[in-house]
Length: 121
Image (cartoon, rainbow, N blue to C red):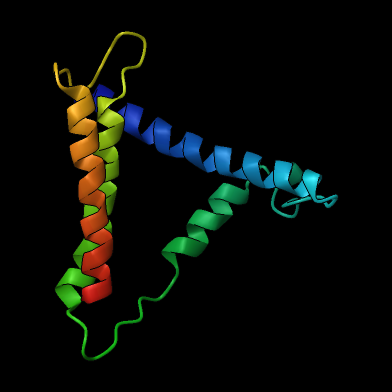
């Protein structure tokens, strides 16, 4: 169980640094420096982005359903983690099943409903 949690955390951290890599490459393509203010050459930018994300204030209109608007991002993250569990790494799959491709399509089609729920809340 600990192995699964550690692999999920490593994947999430690598996504943050792939995002900074993408922003740097786009900056060089557009002949600008890209993010370079936080840390050495902008290497701490994902950490700064995460702090900024967690400090954001949730704005909830009075007529919206608070439970649905609060739960939907968690459902979306859960579905993304379930899709990551289907991907085999070094002949080791977290969720081993004969029907992995079918499971991938089912879970990825369910992610649309989380977007619809947040829009209708």
